[in-house]
Amino acid sequence: MRKVVVTEYNPEWPRLFEEAAAELKKVFGEECLAIHHFGSTSVEGMAAKPIIDLLPVVRKIEAVDRFNGEMLALGYQPKGENGLPGRQYFQKGGDECSHNVHIYESGNPEIKRHLAFRDYLKKHPKEAERYGTLKKKLAEAHPWDIEKYIQGKEHMAANIEKQAMEEI
Image (cartoon, rainbow, N blue to C red; front, side):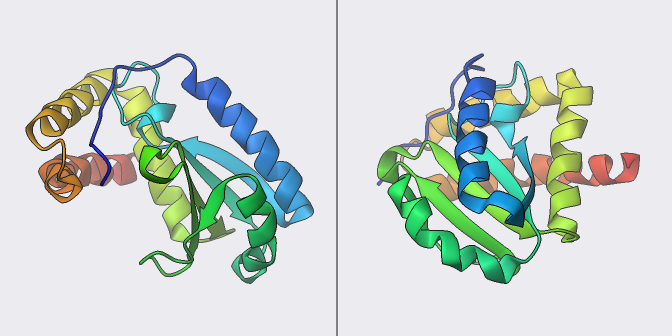
């Protein structure tokens, strides 16, 4: 079982993203159209779980499985859709998770939603601070219960997402 930890912003996160993105670009080659840094580690100054979230956009989602061996060699565990149809998910680090890779096919509306959420928080630092503070409090209150942590931030995240989608 992994402990829920939220830390202050780490200025190393953008570099860690760039390194991981470069590795993924080598693996997926021309199948990969773009790789985005999203999630809380992509918002400068915001507290976050220290896990780099990457969002590669591919030509065809069906092609992703053929890269599982190369992803395993880099330490990423293939998780399939992992409960979200239209996505291929990989995780690195086991219980000490360091990276999550959420792969979508070009045109999937989830891409727009994830990037709008990120961009909204970047544009509204006070909201990012409020969200980060809530996450720190939830991690302190529920260090061994990821479900309660997620449930605790659901309402605020849904409101941020709604506002983000209205801005685009």
